[in-house]
Length: 238
Ligand code: ADP
Ligand code: MG
Image (tube, rainbow, N blue to C red; front, side):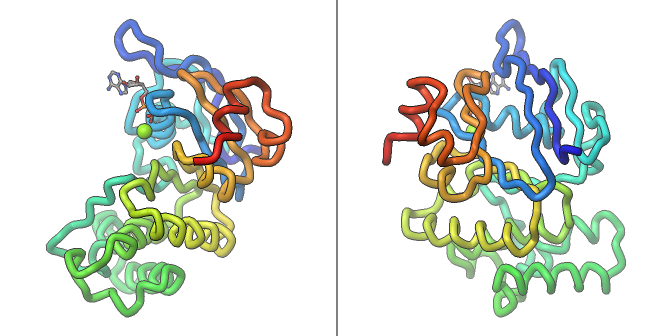
């Protein structure tokens, strides 16, 4: 059974249809990357899965449950954004534990979850620091830590590395791949960066103007693109 299933998902803003009938099955443990040019609807699609945006029509299920009208906090997902707004007045430990504490989890359990995530992300020495005393890459790791502690069925990433400089981006890409290996998590990852897509994905979904152009393993898309758009997008190095 697919972990995440989208069936004829559509999104309209007023008269304009932005997502035009997306069908997609994502298996448990898969790392799926949505790619496509700016404005093609990657974030909108992700936000609908997260519950931050209403679904105009179609059906979304996560873990076998229809989620169209389920509150974001009850979907079994955790999202990491491009602008990883950490709470400036809280330490790394507090930032990572906040959502769990807020949800009423006992302090000892919160501490355990935070310690586990800190070990995975190599944040242990930084747990008592405030965000302003961290580098960009460290802050992004804390943002990922906030998602990990929630132990979600599915991680959603929306261009998490695009605010980092090129060198750090490569480093964090490797970190995210390692993390996926260790947690065996299901990941939906949005990027407009072909190299990120090719290196991270088990499966790439190429979007163009709200339509899925092709779905496949990175090499399959590279070797056998469905059309010139996919060929141009996947094949052109940047
Ligand atoms: P991407 O993440 O691929 O760059 P988006 O999902 O952000 O694309 O946007 C897809 C399209 O939907 C764009 O044309 C954008 O202008 C439009 N859009 C996004 N959000 C809204 C909104 N709240 N109201 C109207 N149009 C929107
Ligand atoms: Mg976007």
